[in-house]
View (tube, one colour):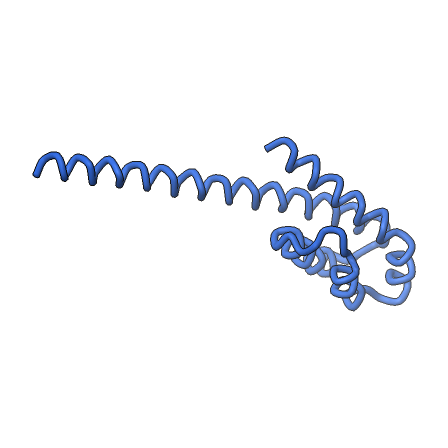
Length: 116
């Protein structure tokens, strides 16, 4: 009976440790992607003069897109979600810089992924 109890206790400890490690990894990835989204949207805010409300909404869209790892090679879906949040002048500016802006995001994600 003691042997069964000690084995089950040992297995419970291993399971708890693995769950804790998994939770820490998820939190780490969340923080990593949050910092990528924040820095990239901050750059966009400066380039096309976003309002605070627009900045917040776009950050949420970018963060969701990055976390889901929606095909990072296909930014058209992301751009389609961002453009309705912009006024006409901002859309024109965004169309000019969007590919370079997106490439900088992909590059930053790759750098962060390589430093795991």
